Length: 274
Ligand code: ZN
Image (cartoon, protein in one colour):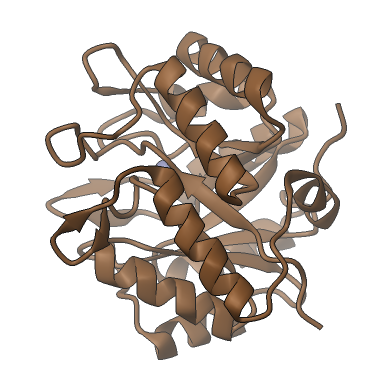
């Protein structure tokens, strides 16, 4: 039996700019509005990055707090803060939002090429992040950009640094990392611990939509939003994050999958209460 389908919306990210996508939410107020619209359209998890007023990425705890408070005043969407941050940030900088005790946070499971840049995640960094999340009752989304990252997560599990149920984010098509291909997704999924939840995150317009179908075929979950893809179709920018969520929800419903609401996610992923 299929479990309910979780749609995560990654509405801002660290890389997308207003020049790329004029409807990109940047300020805490815009982020809260975008999160509300995405929630109305069927998203149950908000993957949250924040920006400075000038639009550049920041991991500043105060900005996260403002955005989280505003989102919570509008809807009950589950909030997953990033700890990936942006290229060039230090681990301590990246870890800041976890101290606000969001229900979930991303945990990158390895060093990865990011176009011409790279993001460093050594095992000691990953252990530090996993421990901080455990201490604060935060459910990690184990982001894997490559097969080796899946195996690195197995090390953390063996060391007792992660608790079940596990939730993986399979990030596909970052330039320099693993591509989205249906057999690649299938292979990665088969290497996850038994019973783990997972969300496919296809980067770029084509990979994003393909990964929606791949996740549906393999009984996984979906992520859409301007962090991953700014287009609705080739050459046509999406009008909003919600437009991408609406389509994902429609496709999932057509495939017979029931869409999870935030409280379903809280039960499925056993998120911390209060
Ligand atoms: Zn992110």
